[in-house]
Length: 460
Ligand code: UDX
Ligand code: ADP
Image (cartoon, rainbow, N blue to C red; front, side, top):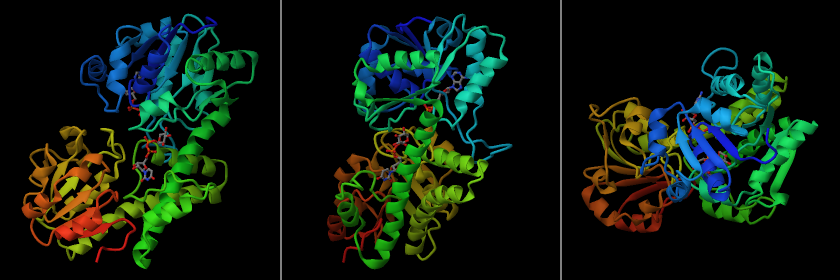
């Protein structure tokens, strides 16, 4: 293994691998990076003008390095053979079968990649876990290497990614910290420093935290669990605000200005989504149960229960407002992604809310600026034959004869919609359910809308 890293291979060209490697390529022009994936369509998209994922600033970053020191391909074995360091950035969904079903993460993709590495590496490599993975995954990777007949010792590092979708590029450019865990042996410590050298191209040494493997793996789960817990905490208070007449945004501001609490991640919403929070919480619950800590497991499980309750509460409120009958009512849905500035819909709360409304036989006119039409149909388990799900290419198309507008993603553009015109196009009384508290409720009420939001008193 070379002391200085010249070649990187990243297996998995998804929301983590793609942006992370694009940033490393941009900051380290002296390093060649091969991003490889089994999904040919995805790789073709990475090599085209229309990237497979939407992320502000990503396209410029990719264009700057692609073909120079950044390459996307399906040549997994070649890239592994040539690389000094291999990042594993494949997906780790929650298991749907067997032991730990619906709780533990499914490591089959990580194990498959580990086997390919064991079979193809012709010299010792550094293997980095980059996927969000449960604690002790490094051990699973190590076990695959040990069981193979390779004579090489590959160092396994944990280097969790903390980027958030929608702000991935700025998160990668100015990370709060870089976390690298490895075995506390001479070989492990050397590998940790080699990986740190890559980040040192643009991240200062004091932001690079070096730990043992398990601390690094656990820290990633715990960081996401704490963030999710903040959202569930503020959402639980939003319900109380609706009963008491307090305003959740005012409460969030008041508590967030205590420097011990801080202002971030206190935005009440219809609930959190995304590929990480639920999966990591379930993982944490599984770990606690596995190690005989049922009280700790129950504590973290309640964060998820609160999230489910918040989504249900919001959908119930809509149905209740129409006296339990939304059969055949036309409803405008603004936003389908799990948050703004991404085309990702994994675990999007919009899916639960829309499914509930479809169960009640409403007709949904859905608009999202970045999510593909087929993705929305897939997520809702339906297709274009279904007259109750119409995907629109312009928000204004969703208002015709609608009885309600529901905002499910906080896209900035939704603030600029002409709601006077929307009101004219809608049936009366016209409702707005602002699931993200992004609209000007006072103005909407003046226009004539019945406005409902999260954690706020109704406008008189
Ligand atoms: C998260 C972590 O933030 C990131 O560090 C980790 O690497 C991956 O998981 P991500 O899921 O991309 O990132 O987005 P995030 O900004 O954390 O939002 C998650 C969900 O919580 C979204 O649905 C968002 O709308 C919701 N949220 C977030 C709120 O409802 N209120 C808030 O105040 C913040
Ligand atoms: P994340 O958000 O963690 O990046 P994604 O699902 O967006 O997750 O991306 C994971 C990528 O890993 C997918 O493009 C998938 O095709 C790829 N992948 C899964 N298994 C393998 C494998 N054995 N070899 C190569 N790529 C893989």
